[in-house]
Length: 113
Length: 112
Image (tube, rainbow over all chains, first blue to last red; front, top):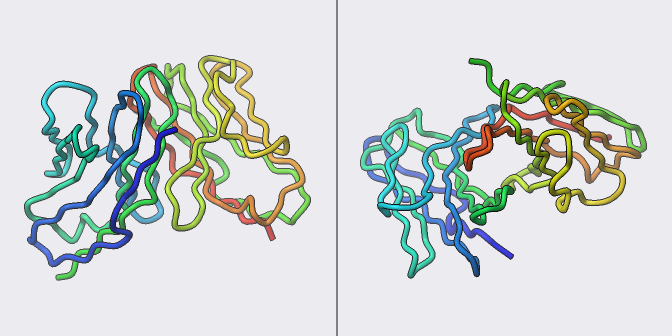
């Protein structure tokens, strides 16, 4: 079975500071990797995904993530955050060829002015 | 274009009652998914439809939960004899058949 661990339940940062949200996964087979963002009272929105190829993936709103197969990690980064980035962020995996997503428990990113 | 829509946005019911939650996927999307998100948790998979058929219902917690997609578009999640533990946000997603799933805003279910 697959599992996803988001190591930080909450991350507070100051505006314009860099941020890294950590995600580790466990799987015995190859997976696709995703980051979703959930703004207050809204549905999940895809930030970025890793399917194959370059391990550095760029997404929307200035976010990027790096797939590290040896460490089974897919950490999300942004060099300079804005107040509008305040949200819950979810890492998810999908077995290649399967359909369901397995999500982590989420990381709440809070931006302080 | 229009995204995934879900109705109602909020549903309050009493323990033991029956509820139906509706999902309208993005037009043309053949795959449809239901997830459940409890407070403070990530979404958990319930069921996946490819067309009209349930291709994977391994996430349904028990036989009180059932979902249909009779014409391969709109789907309804049905919960019988609701329990307080069923309180959660129920999310629907659709996909054109690739890896990316597009989520709706969810239905917040509260069982009193």
